[in-house]
Length: 250
Image (cartoon, rainbow, N blue to C red):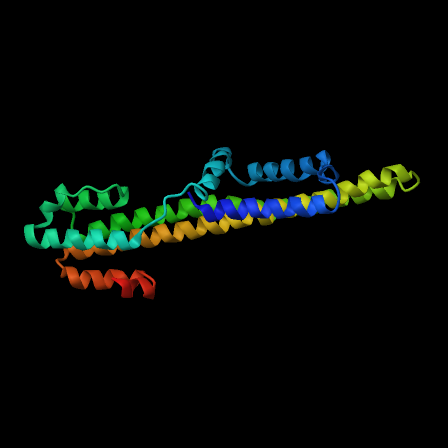
């Protein structure tokens, strides 16, 4: 679980609620028509822009920003170096005994054991990586779109409230509720966009990049193993993907 995401969401909503309570009661900031305009309008726009299965799948994508298995490139490099030592000593077929929980790495091992040449292996694994990047981008784009759409519907709600207010200026009792719709829809749209949608899209893109780096390490490592690169040289080459501080710690 990504504790940083949980802390950020809880802290963000907590500070907003605290500010609301300091200026009055929470009930002052609850307006059903405003919620319907922002939440309902945003969901409607999601269905217009994306397929139905993608919209439903976006909920699962959102949960990945909280419940995620972080990549560990250092451990991956160490595993690849160990495999390089095995292959150098006993041959590529000896890798058949190596089992990994990383499905991408295990697939690469299986290709090697089955006799795939380096060019074919690199082509297959690279395509897999490209498809992964495309899927991840599509999922993050949905929430990035929510971040753009929610404030827009907040503005629509503001305009609706202003029209209602101006149309009933002769009735002072109706000005307050109309103004509440006008202001609260903008507030709701900003909260949805800036506390949930945009930060989550950024987080998802970040995790996607980390996973892509780890998979590229696997591709480079497996190609190096197939070509018989010296394990120590292979390790130094793969460490280029790590931040300088982690390279020095090896």
